Length: 237
Image (cartoon, rainbow, N blue to C red; front, side):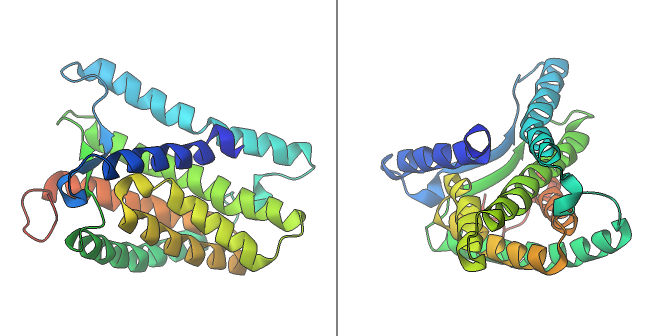
């Protein structure tokens, strides 16, 4: 499963970071783009590629569902359902406010310290579909990461008899690894986020509040950067 999804992304991020380190340029002078145009100057083709990328990225989540059902379980086993939607929404919103704010400060500090690339969340052109696509990408990232790296991985490691500490470390380090393309700040920040998210997942037995939180954090970052990057002095550009 991981070789088909975020495990492979982790390896790719390590290779990307190795390229950044050997480029001879300072980390802060290099840029990591999260969402960029896939067909510049051709809006309908670009939209088709964006939708294709979102849809195919979610295929591993469907596979997770299949594997759970095959084992006489379901995605509800890890709390990916709508049974407690209002509580999940409230918890997710609160988490997003705390983690999102702390994460922004951590990124600014890491960039100032020279250990992080300049992150440009969105370079999509100003078409009518830009904001919907940014929201779709945010939700896709949240579902993919939290279902696989948080819920499914911890569930399977529990079944294998791993200790909570060992499973938490594995999940958090994996989360950090595929963000390494952003620099050491992106790696460290996401490891910390992974530990917190794993604690909350185990406390509540549900992955859905963390999906909500992740979606809100990414949506704020992608859409906020679209309008603020280059217009405020405190945001690295």
